[in-house]
Image (cartoon, rainbow, N blue to C red; front, side):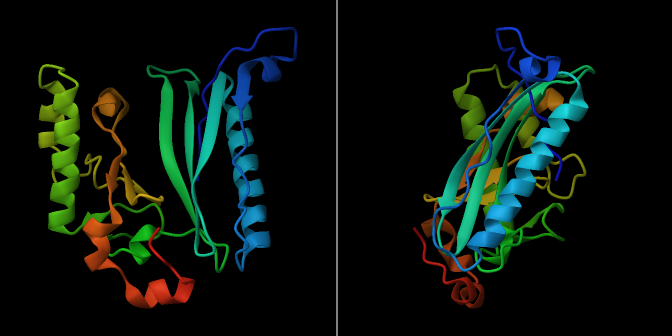
Length: 221
């Protein structure tokens, strides 16, 4: 996984790198899970990757992380990054990183809630039609609430399943206390149009993989 981290210029006399970077590390898990030592190692590795991306960018970097879920089954965090490393657009990204707390490995929420399918952790999602429709409908409602003259609503209306430019199909998924989180991955030019969508667990419960839930000891928060 590659994170490009954005910047806040800090005051005071310091080295160039220290003055350009504002990074708060990803927190460590607290729940006493079976793979806690492995999860701590994985978080350390994630923090090293964030710092490496920051040092390679050469511009300004800012990064924050919040724990979405910390249980004996799942450890899930949300990483927000922004900044400018050159080129036509500033960089901004908010995405989840989810771990199986039984094995300590990266984890796809689609293994637990079968609302769609993907290859690996980062492949495009082939959504169940009803779930994709819900996500798209909520994105449109959110866009209309911004009163942008319909520009974003039109962009989302044209986001079609199977399109290589679909931000919904390119979404990353996270697990939180209030539900399944859907983070669309739009092109920079339309990034402002897409917000994170939360699907309450009650709305996706019928797609729960019960064998998987039993394996990790999952209990819906």
